[in-house]
Length: 294
Image (cartoon, rainbow, N blue to C red; front, side):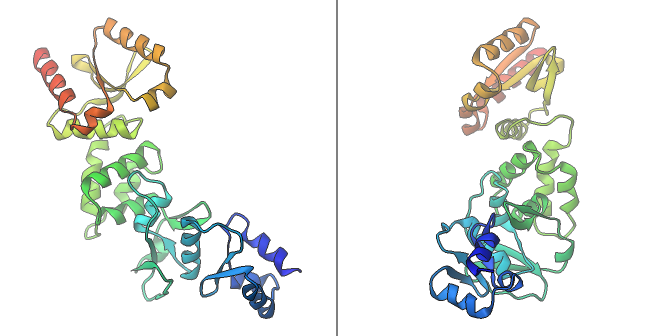
């Protein structure tokens, strides 16, 4: 078979990356392989790993090439967090995890050895083998700030990429990052869950100011309140143009608030600016209403 046809078929859906082993398996001889390299049809990325001519160099291409060069390996740590598109993580230096004793040397990568590599929860995202979301979160927990970790955890849970139970299962005594990750799960231990990352941030800010934990997504008639203190009839709605204009129309939002207030609820509206100032305005309003109710 024409080696050009073979190579084109192999790179389909693989970010333009292919390997020497795959080419040989499809019957392409070493002589023809060297010919593809010499005429520029293949560009060497790592020993035995190539990029097909014309394929645009991307971070995803680099990630897949590194994993294939270190095989068996998985994208891990901050690289896996970026691959899963967790809040606060962007493509950067590549991190891989491999079995203990396996010492690959793909250039431009940081390789981590793991005794239990065979038992690591894994997945494939966009064709790239990587550690699963819970593993990525406990890995980064040991090396990023608390606020950055909060956003990543809340983002993963809001988007249902993982569960509190799955995150708890990766928190083991003595495992780096376990204590930091376990501490953040307390905000998710009660019933209800935020719908968005912004609502999760608001929840953490209110708890950080010493307020009682509100109920999340509390039903009031045909509506659901983002955060609520049902006994005191206090509702907190997070108002983001980008989110609420999609989820519900502006007219619908006004009708919703009117209905809540007509039912005797105090409706507080939190905006993005409240997240910037630490929810001080909302916390003060909630505190005053709770005291009045008492």
